[in-house]
Length: 116
Length: 107
Image (cartoon, rainbow over all chains, first blue to last red; front, side, top):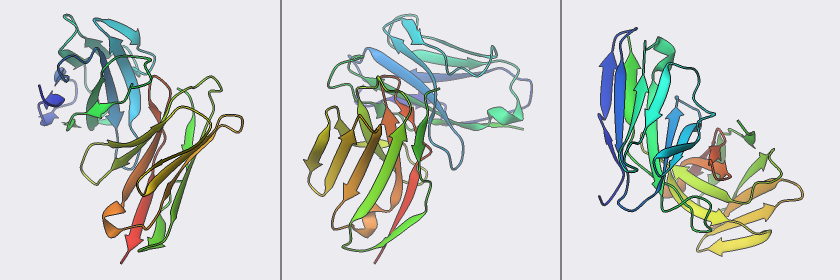
């Protein structure tokens, strides 16, 4: 696509529920990143993929968070047993390829998650 | 996560002045550095990238990198009210972000 697409744009759920957030990167971008941003804070790195594999998942806060990118394009961030502290804007970004001099991120509009 | 530090501000400058934003980072091996701008309620958008020590100019923006001192800065010349936003510094292939500096340009 022309830009990074994230769905849903808004998600309200109850504590303890399971949530999936989807990201469709720019066509041809092999690197895909997930961030979480709370109010007044910078984006917090969660995970990035190079192709289908997670190149670095060190930012995932705990084992309730998991992300996949099975075909090297669309990615899904999965959150189990949601907690109120998970409420944030989840940002996805993609770049042409990892480690190149032209490696710059383009962000999607984000998915705002509210856990009641 | 690697530490990326920014003064959260808020920083206020009059229209037409120079705004100076600073960022320090902890990972000595980082090779790529970025400045993003984020308007309220919007996603970050890239302003500049810099990879080598020294200055890089793009229009009213100048990025400065000093790897030995582990800092990167952004200068905005002839600041405009439309520059009012949060400026985020990002470092490395994982794009570790700082907390951002809120800039207000006063007409």
